[in-house]
Image 1 (cartoon, one colour):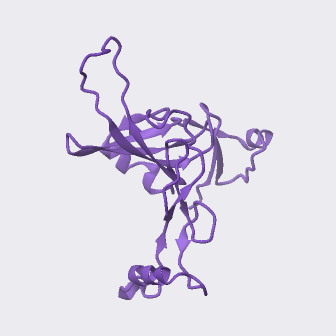
Image 2: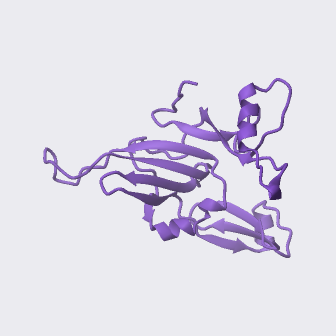
Image 3: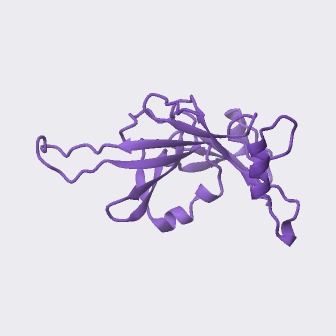
Amino acid sequence: MPQRCVGQAPVYVPQRPGGGPAERVVHRVRIGWHIRLLQTWAKLRCTDDCSVGREPMIERITYSDEESPDPNHSNSEPEGMREITEAEFAQSSFFTLCPVAVEYRQIIPKRPEGTKGVQTDNKVYSIRIYWMNMTPGQADGFAMRNDYYEGRMRYYRVGCDHDYKELSIAEAREKGQAHFGNCYHVTECVHCGRVFSYDSSG
């Protein structure tokens, strides 16, 4: 399939074959599916004694016409890009939440003031952004960069640096948010207003 770009920044969205975006894929055999799908299913199917019969859970990457949630040019860093340590990345929500889109950017660093016509050490580099939320003005995610010259990976957070405040039942309902009490929590970011709800009952 030829690559389709939005502006200059291609955005990739996990999709289910024949289904909508950001869904986990559970391959089930249906009449008319391409034979390659069956071959993929056969290769990935678990064969361990403890997991015979279990179907693989994968996310399929396809191209999308959706706009990037970040307004900056595709050769610029996304808003709120800040480097984090490898330990911070390993302990982050990247491994507990599912990205809804993946975006590639080639970053051209801005020249320091007063260096016009002067050779600098600023090097073009590439990042891959994993958007966890694409709501305009509230988007957030992670980015990875391979530092070719140093031979290492670098990790970043992008978008809003959410700072959530818990809402009471009355406050949540005033804002039109459902709140079921007990172990149900409704929080709101003090920076962008994003609402995040969760059940802590386990």
